[in-house]
Structure formats: structure tokens, C-alpha cells
Length: 115
Image 1 (cartoon, rainbow, N blue to C red):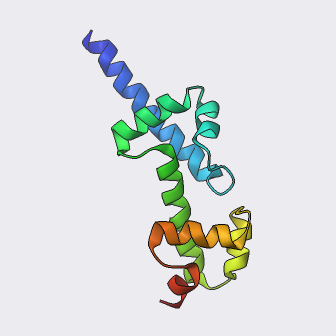
Image 2 (image 1 turned 90 degrees about the vertical axis):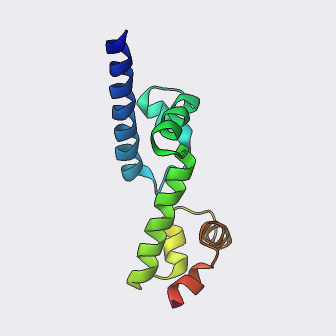
């Protein structure tokens, strides 16, 4: 009995690692938890249960957090325009990009860039 619990624990730890590794490769093009769950061979619900248990967040929350981190990094480098960042990260439009960023940070991308 104890060994089966230990194996489940290890399996879930491995699944978190696999998810994070996949997310790092695909976060800029794949924002859906279903994509990652499918690649891992588990259901989206199970993936979210594991991530919530281990990291305290759902797959979507983790993906969006990673995306916001990347946007902030890109805004700080000043090498590309806000419009180019939105395009590179596969947002449907500049307004979608701006709404997404403001929802997560409380400021617009241009306001963040000016800081």
C-alpha cells in the first residue's frame, strides 16, 4: 500500500516536470491546457488536479504567468515594438494583447515599457 502511494507521488512529480518542460517549448504558441494534457496522455482535468496539488495553480494560470513574464522581458529589452511582441506571441490582435497584459499586471504594455 505504501509503495503504491509513493509511486503515485513520483509519477505526479514527473508529470509536473514534463508539463513544465513542454510548456517552456510551446507556451508562445499553445495556451490551451488540453494541448499539454493530450501530449502527456492524460485528461485536462487530471493535469489540472496534479498541478493544483503540486503548484497551487491550474495549467492555464501557469501558462499565462509564463507568457506575462516573457512579455515583460521583451518589453524591457526595447528591441521590438509592442505590436511585434503581440505578433511574435501569437495574439490575434494588438487589442487582445493589451487586454491580456493589463488583466494580469494592472497596466498597459506601453505604461510598463515606460517604467
